[in-house]
Length: 296
Image (cartoon, rainbow, N blue to C red):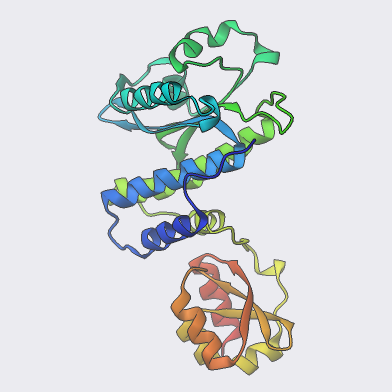
């Protein structure tokens, strides 16, 4: 009963490539990060509704609102009702400490709600505003380096394939907190010109949104020194592609800061006659350290 992502994988990767290539982020980049985050959250958590809020001038602003097509099930009039609700919310600005979202933004503490654990009373007002009964909800702060810039909230999990209801779990909450953490860092880089994004946060963001595994410690990998000598230090430095093992005779696994850097991937393969089978994302500082260590 799952719905397709509202951002295709190809478009998601295109947006990521655009964002990370910009030295001076634009408003469009901010919008892209928000849309990418929404797509990631909906896909991973199978949420029927998702809202991303930002704090602007001491007010809570609805920056992104999503309702799953499951909620209207081919009913055109009901679909229009949800679209009207979405547009109304996107135009809304709330005082900073309004409601549960305001509380999460003020404290930085996540909120977990499940009907089976908490009872229906807590969600009566919210259910009136959403047009559907809220049975499960997660709300987390968008925070980085002790700065809170907004919140993400998801409502109700998609039903199982047999139609039976499902609820968010504590593990889902941890996943949402992780997404909120590295998304906040990237948004702060765009909203505050004085903010310097942590390299590890940037690498985690790229890894998650390109579906590429992340390496954070060189001890997690074993480097084939014969392969490194075969490729040569000059090629590794000029392409920023660091091979660490052969996966077959002429195929390799590599580390890159940006797995979507097609130009350097093709240059590496052309110069070495080696095809790249696997890519791992590494932060800029880890790549620099490893290249200095293995490329004399």
